[in-house]
Picture (cartoon, rainbow, N blue to C red):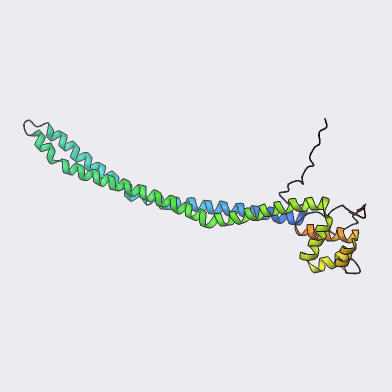
Amino acid sequence: MSLTLAPRGPRLLVYAERPRRRMLQVLSDLAVAVWVVLVVSAAIALHDLVLALQAAGRGLTDAGDRVSGVFDGAARAAGSVPFVGDRLSGAFTPGTDAGTAISDAGRAQVEAVAAVATGLAWLVVVVAAFPVLATWLALRIRWVLRARHALAARELDVDLLALRALVGGSPGRVRRAAGPGGDAAGAWRRGDAAVLLRLADVELGRMGLRGPNAVTTGGVPVTRPDVPRDG
């Protein structure tokens, strides 16, 4: 019984291999992080600012509690009067109820202000931070997936990378990759190993990846000559 191990897939890159592209990615990540921190700080400051409006509600609650306390104390004192205590204490009930109503209104105002403060804070985060985060995350995931596919092609399908460079690469870089003749398409059709490697380097360089080290043509592996790097 024999055990066959599956070949390992291409490694997963988070940042580019070439210094210039990697630095741009790091700077963009830092810029997004700073922006999110600023937005969250602004949302917290706005939340605290709106919460300051609770002072009026708290004052109303305290006033209602004092009114209720006064009338409740008077009702208890009147209730101790012989014979007419119950009737006297009942006379203070509307005052106690009024104080309770004032307190309830104050508490409702405090809760409403707290809800508005929380809602505004979340609104600021969603409007100012979420689109930036979503766009950044989508671009980063897209780059990681494209880099994974490009790394697989770098090892197995240099011809495909060269063809992609012919289709979407910078015309100037494609001409330089073709060499003195300048016929990149013809070199690709002929399977010119040196030109294929330079074209693949152009395509991978667009993503900040290093070019392939070798290509197999006619069953013979050809090592890459020195290829100018764009950093």
